[in-house]
Length: 241
DNA sequence: AAAGCGGGGCT
DNA sequence: AGCCCAGCTTT
Image 1 (cartoon, helix red, strand yellow):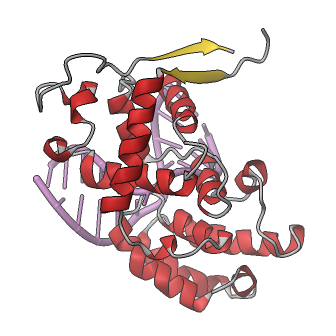
Image 2 (tube, rainbow, N blue to C red):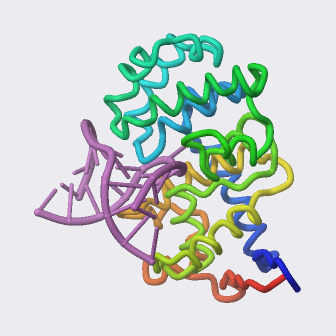
């Protein structure tokens, strides 16, 4: 077997349980964020780039200001770079203003003014990696693409017991999982939900296991709460396909 | 595989 | 003082 791609195979029960819990979590506790009120791929992309290694609370006002001043990709393409950077620089990672401006100009010149519609075309844009491209595919276009950010990495790593070494192999496994767990329906709600679940419940520090719907089935919650007596292990394995 | 980007928030 | 934050690009 040549050119083998890893695929994650997850036992059906933990997978379904995980999906159900995430979707319910989003219905009941999901955050109301400005970039969740639109399906405009341009607006989604702007939000995602501003959110790189930056907290939601910091991004919110900047996103509002950015969209007010540059409501369309054409508006951004026609703007002076300095006016863009004036808005985005305070967030840090100051290259992002240049990225957004360059993206807009490239969309105008190379894509006829329309946002790219495929994962590959999106990833070809400066500052757009696999996460951001997947976010646009699922949040703007409703496509079944995986998203792996710091939240999803932590949640999947814990629940599906991916060893927390900093290796490329771990990243590989996490990406395979991130794509495998996305349900066929309710892609948007699920991907938003995993991130909310990670941000609000399965947090990096002081995870809220006591109010976690999955605590009885989570290997990482050992000692934090009673485990289910049987069938609790979320077996995950990988093989060449 | 590792470094660099970066300011803000929270412990 | 240290860790974390809806990552990506460059050595």
